[in-house]
Image 1 (cartoon, protein in one colour):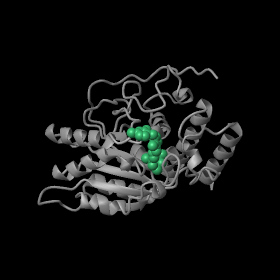
Image 2: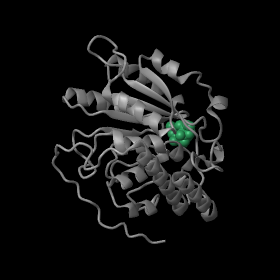
Image 3: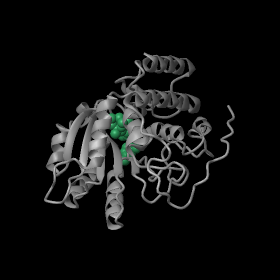
Image 4: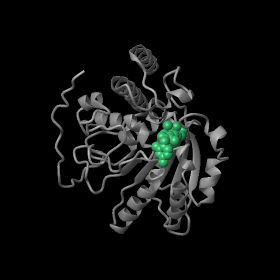
Length: 307
Ligand SMILES: Cc1ncc(C[n+]2csc(CCOP(=O)(O)OP(=O)(O)O)c2C)c(N)n1
Ligand SMILES: [Mg+2]
């Protein structure tokens, strides 16, 4: 299939005093429908490319939808607005969920989605900040996102900017030692402007985290490092929105008088969420559905949204 990516919207250049672009924050019901649209995009993109990672994209769809359509302070017409909230998908292989959210939110034409993973596409197999409007950090090699987010949060404070930094990590990814170096440093600097969200879908690429590297209670581990940690159902939109909004509002336990701890949200999710034959099945970590499988998936997702 040949796709004409169309004309890219131009970067508006100078910063404007726009909060959340021109979009009124979506209601929970609207967010749930948008998450369904994003899940459909994910299936279509990966089926068209015949490559990609559906499982971890689908599990994170509710979190990414809530951030882009309600919680984050962003302006899609001005992706480099200095006061924008920063988002990092540290588990970069799940980028179809990010690309869909960016397209649905207006950062670029939706027709680009059909070019996923092509050599000349702005949407590569892993996120590339040099190619995609709205992407602030290249990812794919697991374990780096929280350290970069920490730097962005410190930079914001040094510049007197009040943006918030959001980092989504995988529950397999947190086996990387570098995650815990950043986890140790963030409370040291009282970075209440940094939120980590761990997409706990119980699976990594070829099996259960519990069988490969049991982590015990992740919440207890983050608390031991000085974070405010809470556990939520990461596929329940109302719970997701509440946790994210509270993290942004800084309604967390003070570390010391006048300072705030960074927040870690342990989001319990289902890998492959929304597609029955993909749910909780390790094989769908990095496998593309054929046309028939994709049609089945789209049908299920649309029915769930309509119902
Ligand atoms: C440093 C590094 N090691 C290994 C990989 C290969 N890899 C890609 S995805 C993945 C599993 C990640 O599991 P998780 O973080 O739980 O992601 P999710 O379940 O959300 O897909 C691995 C090991 C990688 N991308 N980077
Ligand atoms: Mg996982």
